[in-house]
Length: 275
Image (cartoon, rainbow, N blue to C red; front, top):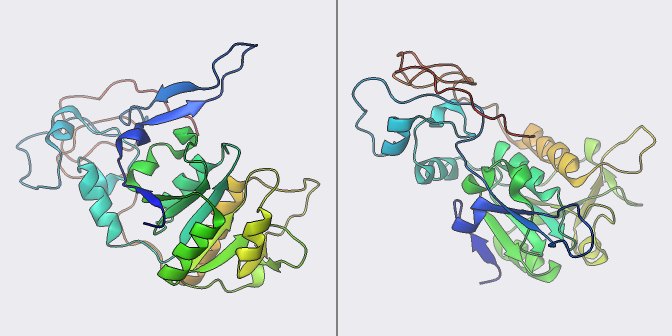
């Protein structure tokens, strides 16, 4: 194998590590375990007879579904959601360098899920802060590479063009370039940007136009801009139901509106997840 691959929903995806504020002797990281049912949106228990559908999770039907998923996936098993997403994933991949425990990676993963990237590749350290991913890493294929050489080998085997995103001398404006359909969009570490090996490996480096005083935007923001540029060039508008179109029979809940059938009552107050 060229790299280790974490299947969506792998057990360690439930944990993130945060560096605490503290004096000498403080632990280097503290462990945070996420509960996916604390998204702040959702529906209550299913009202009436349960549907005969193997994609649905009996525990969610019985207790309600408050996960951070669009309404078409209410009550679905996680594995069923991943399988359905796999039938529709786009041809672009996303990679981010992680040499210094970058806190933007969670945002990159969440954005990759929103734009339905084929895979996310993390180059360097395997440990990253999952808090910003808002549990979307459970539905996204994540692959790990120890270095740029391994990422480049994977891209060659998969027929992907490595496209670096960084405001470097000689880079091509993202606003005027046509991205390859089978792109691997590569983002650097927060601060230094693309490493020197990454710059040499990229077939194309694109810059993002800026007009203010700051030298750069963070990798999480840059990734969203670049992924949406690919979407505008190669994807069609989504055809799934609008938010709020929960299944008929869904119980009343907070956040995304209640279903057509009144359930046994609201789910009750739920914490709002941070963004």
